Length: 133
Image (cartoon, one colour):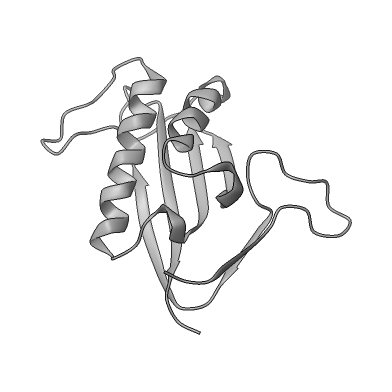
């Protein structure tokens, strides 16, 4: 695990409530492609249900991070792509199951017209930093 420094409120910047403005680390960068709500068999999880989809997406992210020898503790940035900003509370609830409030990464949320298939409500990608000084 990398030593990470989180700065939720840099001087002159309004404090972030749901993310850290800056996360710094040293070591190896791990980029996790946008994950969607499919299970290990490629089947959609939670059709029409942003909460179920968010839980599956975070589980997929967890598995991808683990494959790289990382965990959510190493994540420095999450990017959320959502078809409706109204899904953000469900996403935050799923995130809270994996990332405590005192370890929030930097984040961006973007509402998009569509994802790769119309039944997907959200996609999340992650950047993590492992090890090293």
